[in-house]
Length: 616
Image 1: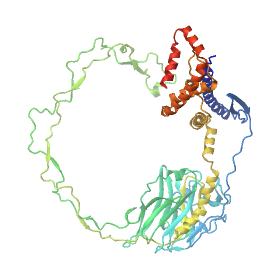
Image 2: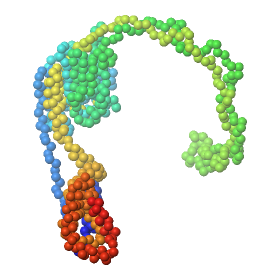
Image 3: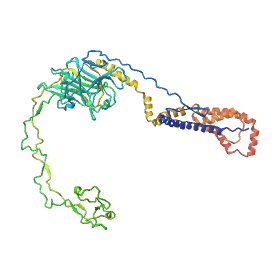
C-alpha cells in the first residue's frame, strides 16, 4: 500500500492559526471602542463599566461580561506638617505658626499725590492656611484685599550690618488666585532715625528691594539696592540685570515658590527660585546705572564752531543743468493711441437714484432737508464697457525727468561729526565695595495688587547658607513633598485626562496596548508550527515504507531546504535511509516491476521525486 502525507489538513491548520491571530487584533480594537463608549456614557448609565475578557484556549474565544467593583487607588503617603526651626544664627525668622500677627506692625500711613479714596494703606492682612493646603496646620501671611494699598513690617532681632558676612534673604510666595497686576516683593528698611513702622509707606527709605512683580505680560524678579554717593550723599537706585530665565510659570502655576537672594562681600550676587539659580552677577558690572560714574564727561560749556562742516557729501558746484532738461514736463500724459471702446454710453451716468427707494415716514424736510433717493450703480452700464464721459487713460511721460539736481560729491571740507571735548568728571568717585550698603533694621511688604489671596511664608534673613538651606528644606521642601504625594503618577494623570476626553482611550490602546499585545502574540506564541512545504509530496504511487522511514525522509527534505550549512549531516542521514529503503525495496521488487510494465515508464512526478533524492 502507498501512503500519502496529510498535507492539506496541516496547511489548513496554519491558515486557521493566522486567522485567529488577526481575529485577536480586531477584538482588541473593538475592546478599545467599547471602553470609550462605556467611559463616555458613564453619566447616563450610573457609571456601570463593561469588562470583556478574552481567553484563548484550544483555538476557542470566550467572551464574558462582568461588572467588577471599582478598585480604589492606594492611599497617597501622608506628609505631616512640622514647624521649621532655624539651625543657626538668624537676624529674622517668621513662619506664622502662632496664627497671629504678633510682632508685625500694620501701617496707618497715606500715600502722597494720590486720591484720598485709595491713598490709605487699608488693605487687609490675615494669618491663614492656604486654600488648597496639603499640610494642615501650616499657616502664612495672606494679602486679602484687591485694588488697595497694603503695608506691613516687622523689626529684625538685630540690625544687619554689611561687613564681612554675606546676606541671605529668603521667603515663600504662592499666588493662589494667579496674579493680574501686583507685586510680592520685600523691602529691607534702612536703619535711620526717621524710621517709624507705624508710618511705613512707599517713600520710606530702604536698602534692598527683592522679589517677584508682574503687570500685564511683564514678569519681573526685582533686585534693587540703594547706593549712596560718597561725594554728594545722595542715594540712587541700582537695578540688577533682568534674568535670562522664563519667569512666567512662577506666576501662573499656583504653586508655592521659594525666592532667595544671596549677596556676598566680594560684590557677587545670586538670585534663586526653588533653589535653582536664575540670575547672577556682580554689583560693579551687572547693574544699571553703574555704581561708579565715568572718569570723564563731555564739557557742557563746549559749543560747536559756526564754520564746522559735518556734511560728508555736497552738491557738485561745477555741475550744470542740460539744455534739454524740461523740469515742467508732467509725470503722466494721456495715451494718444487709446480708442474709445465700442458701445460706450456717453449719455448715461455711472450712478442713478434708486427707483425703489421711498422717503421715510418720519422724514422732516425742515429738520433733515429735502429728501433724495440714495444712489445706485446704473443698471444700463452693467452690459456696456462704460458710462459717462470717456477720457483717455494716462500713461507715463517718457520725457519726464523731474526737478534737476546737481550730483553729490565728497565734501573736501568735511570735518566729521562734532562732539564736545572731554573734561574730568567733577562728580567722579570709585567705590570698589558697593556691598557695604546702608544697614537695615526691619523687613516690610509695601504692595499694591489687583489680585487677592497672595500667600507669604517662612521668612528668614541670615548669613549662613547652610542655615538658609535647612530652613528651606524644613519649610518649602515639606510643601513640595506634600504636593508631590498628592499629585497622581503618570498613569493616574493619563487616566484623569481620559476621563475628561474619552477619545484618549483609543490613543492609549493604539500607541501602548496594541503594540505590546502584538509583540507578545507573534513573538511568544508557543511552539513553531511546521511549514506546509515540509509536507509537500508527490501524489503518485510509491513503495510501501514504514512510518518511521517516511518521517526520516521528510526530515531530510526539510534540513536540505532550510539549512544548507548542515549538508554533511543530511548526507549521513540520507545514506541510512537509502540502506533501509534497499532492504524494504527487495521485498517489493516484483510488485514494482509489475507496475513499471503496466505504466511503460515512470510518471513525471516520480522522476521529479527521484531526481530530488539523487541531488540530495
